[in-house]
Length: 181
View 1 (tube, rainbow, N blue to C red):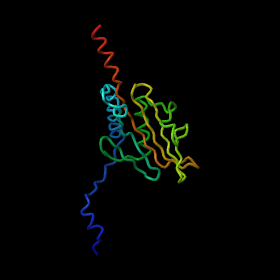
View 2 (view 1 turned 90 degrees about the vertical axis):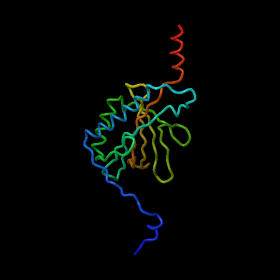
View 3 (view 1 turned 120 degrees about the horizontal axis):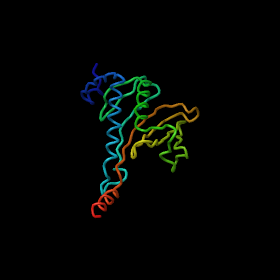
View 4 (view 1 turned 90 degrees about the horizontal axis):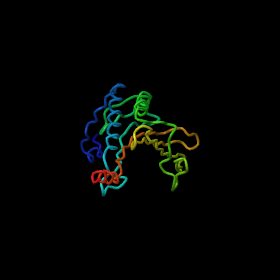
């Protein structure tokens, strides 16, 4: 029997399964993302560029509690990796780029966010946003977004990104002043 809903949607593109990556392949993707974030810090914010536009985020990893595998991303999906292995490699790479998990601050503290950067939802879950500034590379920071059950603190989903921020425009003025001296 023909399903009318399938006919309405038309042919669906075939999904190609992503390959399972080795630790070396995962490390190479993550180092590439870190290098792209670090490269952003060498640029200078444009005169009409807003502070938000002067930042660029790159994926480190995301994990869903009830899934065994996580997707590894560069500019696009690259492959899959077992969650524990991915997390170990990711923290190793982030550590080399200045991550110190003991030095963080909440990304948001106003609105419905508490002083710890968490926001409670009516369905028994909460969302937390934290920033970990790189301790070795100015302009690079790591951001963690976590959904969890409010009562138990058990994580539902966690996502880490690395962000590079361009240098302020005023740096151009300093360079010009040095030229005219």
